[in-house]
Length: 504
Image 1 (cartoon, rainbow, N blue to C red):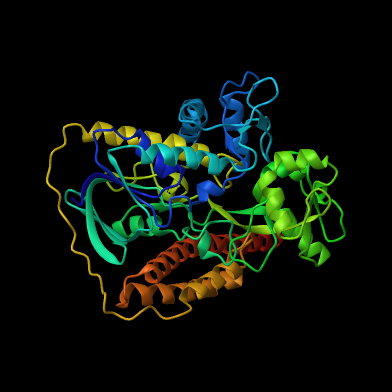
Image 2: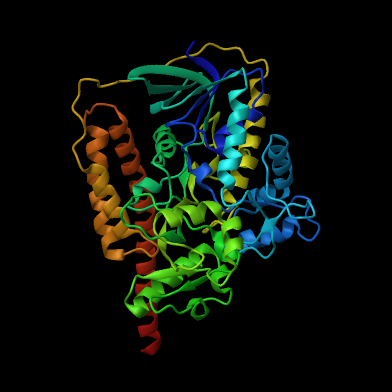
C-alpha cells in the first residue's frame, strides 16, 4: 500500500499542477508538509504574467523584459518556453475555475508591475496566489488516483534501484513510501533568514534531499530581496506590499518623506526588484536612516480599497490606513532564482527525479526574477515534467525496492539555538549586498554547524530535518558567495598590479 507510481513533494502551484497533469492511470501520492493551504504560492499577491489573448503584447516583449530584469543571464531556451507556452496554462487554469479580474467591457484586467513594459499581469484583486491554489487544490482533491497527505513531514528521501524511497513522519508514526518517479515542488529557502516573506514551510528541504542524492544544485546564491516588505521586526514572516501597488502609482520615499529613485534609475519606482532594493540600501547609507515608506495616498481611497482589499485590511490591522498613511517598508528575503538544476522538461541530473517551482533552477529568471513570472514558471514546467513521466510510465511494470532508513527515535534532540544561529549568520553576511568580512567568517561557522548535524546522531523530527536543511542551504549559498567574492578580490588585486606596472 506504500508503493506509488509518483510521489509529489509539495502542495503549492507546482505540486498541485503536476498532479493534475499526470495521467489518471498513475497512482500518485502528494505530500504536504503542513496543511494544504500553507505554501508560498498562496501568498502571491500580484498575479501571473503572460501573453494570453493580448493583441498589443507578444511573447517576445515578455521575453525581453524577463532578460532585462535577469541581467541577461537567463537561459534563452527555457525562457522562450516560458513566454511562448504561457497561454496554454493560463487558459487551462481558467478552465479549471480560476477567476481573474475583468474590466467593465468584460476583457481581462491586466496590471503593470516593476520591470514590465506592458500591462500583462493577470490577477484576482491582490490575492491571486490564493485564488489559483484554492481552485487547483479543489480539483486535486477530486481525483481518485491521487492520495493527499497533509501535515506529513518528509524526513529523508533516497534514490533506489527502482526509483525513490521517502521516510515520512505522519501522526507520530514513521513510514517508508516508495515510487518510480519523484517530483520535488517544495518551494523556497526563506526561513534561512531572520526575516522573510516566505511561509513557515520554506526551509529548503527538497533542495537538501536532492543535494544529498547527488543532484546538481546551481545558482543558490542568487537570492531576491523584495524591496517593499512591510517593516515589522516583531515577526519573522514579513507581510509583502505587492509590486502592483507601485504599478498603480505608489511612490517610494526616504526618512525625509522625499522621493529618491530618480537618483538611481530612470525607471523610478518601476525598476526591477534588485535595482530598487539596492537603491534603498544606497539611500540608507546616504541619509543614515533605515526608515523608508511607500506612499499611495495621492490615489482615490475607494480605488485603493477595491484594488488592494487584502493589503488594505492587513495594514489596517497593523495600525496603518494606506489611503492616508505612509507605509513603512524595507527590503526582505523573498525569492530564490537558483535551486535544483533541471532541463527544459524539469528533470534533474538524477534520473526520474523532477523539480519544479521555486526549488528548481530552470534558468528563466537569470540573476533577478521579473515580477509575477514565478507562478507562470511553476505552471509551465510542472506540466512539462508530468508529460515526461506520463510517457515513461506507459507499460511500466517493475517491483519496488525500499531504502532502510535509520529513525534514531531514542536519540537526543538537536542542541538548541542552531536554526537561530544559521539565520543570524545569513542575515548579517548575505543580505542585499554581501558583507565580505562576515561572509568569510560566517561560512566557517556554517561549516561547523553543518558538520554537527551531518555526523551527529539526533532524533529525526521536524526540528532536526529543518535545521539540517537550513544548514545545507546556507552552506551551498555561502560556498558560492565566497567563491565569487574571492574571485572578485583577486581580480581587483590583479587590476591594481596591472595599473602599477603601467604607471612604472
